Amino acid sequence: MSGAHVIEYRIVGDDMQAVIITLDPGEAVQAEAGAMMFLEEEIEMNTQTGGGLMKGVKRILAGESFFITTFTNGGKTPKKCAFAAPYPGKILTTDLGETGPILCQRDAYLCSAYGVEVSVAFTKRLGAGFFGGEGFILERLSGDGLAFIHAGGTLLKKELAKGERLRVDTGCIAAFEERVEYDIQWIGGFKTALFGGEGLFFAILRGPGTVYMQTLPFSRLADRILAASGANRGETRAGGILGGLSNLTGGDRNF
Image (tube, rainbow, N blue to C red; front, side, top):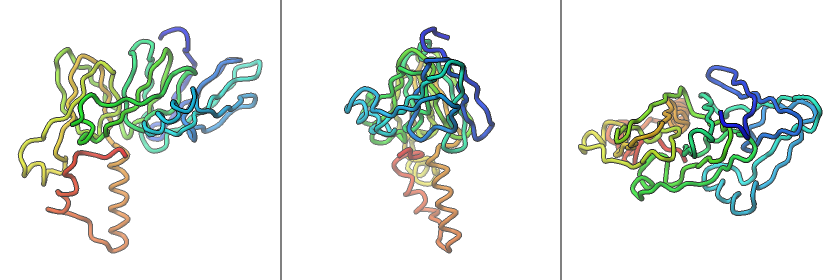
């Protein structure tokens, strides 16, 4: 791991994970507002925009809150704090000092070493923005330290060689290195697009670089819960042609 902002941590849980971080005296960690699970005594909280008005606005565009909270050990002995994921899934740990900046889905940021910057990243191609399940805006995590990203379900890591392409359901992209090229592609065949339930487009990821995929995007989980809730109220779930039409604009939604 790279040196300046390495922190001691432990990830606990299986499908509902949390990260427990041990802070030395004077050491700090930052987290998305609302992610904190517990704090030991003498850990001080400070909520701010983390760099001014525009940085807060950029975080809102990226799907996070306007404010970011810093947790600092103000005592004389190591103290623990913990941050929990908002829905079932896995926590991905990445050292930005080794990987370089990471692009990830909206709302994916959980916490990080102090000094890691959470900002907005626009996809390079308009088509990917309008039709990709991740939307035109992605989160960009940069700096020199550990960052913790939450993804739904189980994480699958894929190393792409130079020029290697991977087609992914747009909602199943959790994160990827900034050097990976991102675009979309027509799924092909009107009947397949209309009735296949996968939407009209794939996300196309081109190496070199590392890609992380999630098996259960939150949008997919939310859609199933809403559908089941409607069925319980005696409502009819959309199927057939109507179900196909509801998926025309892409895979899973993340906003």
